[in-house]
Amino acid sequence: FNRTSVAARDIVEGSELFVDYGQSWFLTRDGVFELVPVQESYEKAQAFLGEYAKLLLGVERTVEDEEEEEEEVEQNYNILDLLEQDKLILGEEAQSDLWELIKTFPYPTRERQALPDTAKDAIRAALGDIMTVEEENSIRDMEYLKEHGKCVDNIVPGTSTIPHAGRGAFATRFIPKGGLVSPVPLVHIADKTTTYMYDEMIGPHGNLVRNTSEIVGKQIILNYCFGHPNSTLLLFPYSSNVAYVNHHLTEYNAEIRWATDFDFFHKQEWLDKSVDFLEKEWTAGLALEFIATRDIQPGEEVFINYGEEWQRAWDAHVENWIPPSKDSDFNNLTLFTDVVEDKTRGRAGYARAEDLNDDVESPIRTVTEQKTIPYPFSVEMICQVKIGHMEPYYSAPITAPFFRREWDEEEDPQTPETFEKCDIIERFVKEEEDYDPDEEDGGEHEYYYTIRIERAAKRTLEYDNVLALETHVITGVPWSAIRFKNIAYTSDVFLKKAFRHEMILPDDLFPRAWMNLIPREERES
Image (cartoon, rainbow, N blue to C red; front, side, top):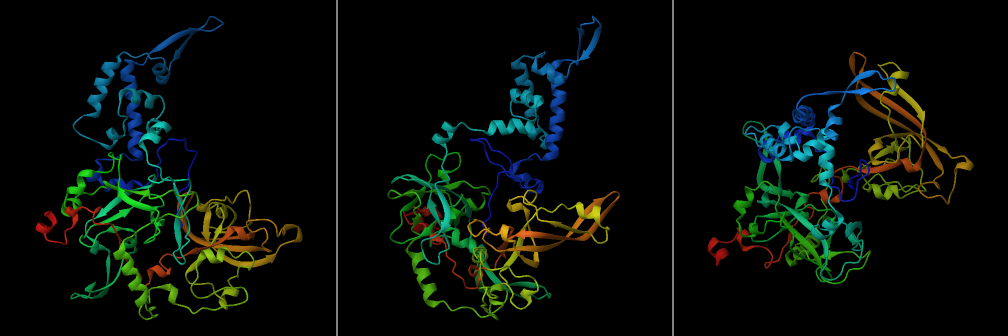
């Protein structure tokens, strides 16, 4: 569904990238990550550094200074000023010993984990802040990255050259034969049957339980995993854009191999371990690489060979495919309505948001028009606006927060985070001076729209919390600020009996130690 990551601020080249997983992600994984610090931990650690700085200075001291009028004034120097002037009573060696004692104290806490690793960094953090020091330490020299890193932007997604394949991966630059197309770090899944899906039935105690007598489908993640017919193990790639690399049995231009020069991540010794061993390893530690089998030109689509077994499975699926009925797949919204064509090319049946978003000419239908000519159930409408949540409360009673304004090209920022689910309540023809058929990004669209956004919101007003339905009506909204969005799980890949099969690693690449579906003696021979 086209999820993207956007820089929250300017990023210096060589910086490590971070996102916010949320505190609970770490708080529930103490046994894995050993007390990862959270926001509160950094605040307490920063306060500790203030006391540590006083310790290094001995005592908080004062100095005397004479003003031009020869009056004596006592001036308290800030602790940071003294640190900057290196007015320390402990030498570097003593500082290092003291800091090591602090960091190795036998009772770990999140606050201690938040402290810098070295005595020098502790001084830097006391002068500034811990997070800034961590960020600065994470920056790598570009020459270092060129020597030790793996380039992940050699490929980008685009519409595949294979009909009906959806998207594919395309080279962003020239990649010579034998060159790296992309690193492929992997998450290992010990038992492929965890991807199986079953119907539900009433259990002996009146509760819903799995009906394991029949597999009704498999999770879509299976299509993006590597595996082997003689193993229960799956390997899921999670590097940028590698999931878009499509299959070609004969005309592939990239091949797969185990990662090289990647020791800090790829554990080569795991290739000799059993699947039982991997099942107990809860962190990633394996990586493949896609390598060019010939020169690949910029803009050329990249293909790998998913394996002959995968090809046979696909051919059999196509030959035997029977579209499911509504009754047999009642959970899938793509089957709920019949296709209805009209002069505006709208369809009440199945359609993708991308098709509707490409239609610049047709007017977007209002809620009244949609009663007779509805849009597909597989899409919803979203609008690109900035909701100022407090403003309606200042201009309307708390019981009925209502806000009406015009769309503002300056205030309604052009970022994905500002999209809100909306309805079109009115449509107006543009004034002649606003209509420009040669302008890109919707300038040639001849209408403006009035939209309505309704959302429940909890707001704190003075001494009380209020939960109310906000109504926002925004007029003069251009076509470019109104988009259609695919509703999750409505594409045809989620139909029951849709194609599911892992990509197959060849025998010479897949370790025999992992082939746990053949007898041990045969595996070890």
